[in-house]
Image (spheres, one colour):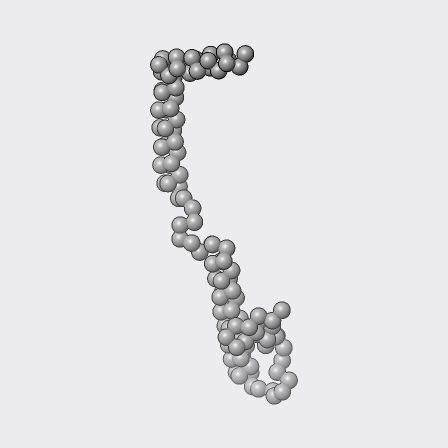
Length: 110
């Protein structure tokens, strides 16, 4: 597959880095300049492709997950809620209500 980016293809840029120029034999400075330009274009195209693919996968979202501090606060809040729930469920009034509810359900069932 030939992916074009800004007028140069990946395959053409890669070939220009390794293949000699068969049309004319330029001096070393011109050949080095061509290779440098092709290399820069190839790096730019690769960076652009990585950026586009990253955006498609959601990798560049600034708030992709929680930080360590947010995990700590969430854990403390969950522990506090669990402690409160335990206190409510183990109180005598709630225990009596739960026992009567289970007894009524068993009486209706048979």
